[in-house]
Length: 495
Ligand code: 173
Image (cartoon, rainbow, N blue to C red; front, side, top):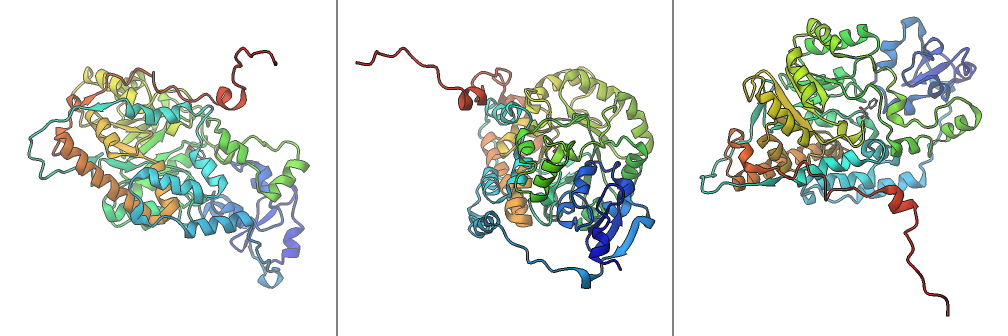
């Protein structure tokens, strides 16, 4: 056992020990390999790093990444000075607000979860989750696009019974919606992604596990019911042996689809996240003063994304096919040109996605791209193509959004933030409620639309003529609206 005194003597780049979950690790040789850079570890050199480690890393990350001789043993508890943790005023206020949340039965739609999450989340978490790239034009367009599509409902069709169940990549799903991957769930709730897994299991919904989940992959799979279908979102590592191990482990554990993210060779600049970086973090403030070379302009996401391989290309796809039998889906396709390349490459599907507006700003919405892409795919084989699924995500909050995307040819729709905010604000019960809301909305909208099942949703049920006209949805311009003074008009002379 090691005393805290001994540990604190290893607080430099030459010898860096840290404590995580009561165990001591020598991370000196790992400093340069840490995906988030060495400086962030050095902040905790010689000290307990558990609190900073927890929301960002799966529990086993440090054990798996360090060879056993670097596992130095337990901290001697008799040497630990119990610090009474001072709860900040801001945290006290936050807890008081959590206690005053609206009761769950007053939550009527997915927007409500978002409004509650904004109030009760720590600022850092809200900034990370809600932020999008640059001027945040695409994230707003993702919602606006759905508002430019109008329904053409059919009548007198005996809609007593309506059924919105489906299969997604051959897996039964009670909703034509899957839970899309969002990273770092523990920033927003202590149980992180497990809230989604448990609720999804109870309600027959499919969850896509994120590579950068706060919970470990195995914790998530262990929390699923036997035979509960799960998908995996993959960030491809520069070290392909790591990716291969990860993918093959996932397949062995029963994952039913591999969604390779292809729109993030570099992470977009999410300025709200970047501005939060060191705010309210005393240790961070010191680093900022004392250390040159700390990247002050990196938010949570960018700091931990350096392992992602920007060299990923079409040439890699045969390799993925050779290492797994799971269906392979490319997540982040935006053009008919790439949709055709994906079809020709023999993958099993694509997700029309702009990464929730977090990557290339002013890229178009998945919904708008769906129209062009379906038109081209129709000329390249059977439609719908049972061997090639087209999914859409981004901005989906209402069943009416879901129905519009399905009518225009989507196989199913992904929702990321909608479910994320449901668990941030109400845990697992929030996610269950979100499923219930979507089911109720689907039932009503399908009756009113005259579609008794998802097959009866046809392109003629929507008017998408305005979709490609971006007028009317011109977003606010932050520079002109917030910083510049308004133009002045001619003024009368003072009397
Ligand atoms: O959108 C994201 O924030 C994201 O995909 C990501 C990527 C790398 C690290 C953390 C999150």
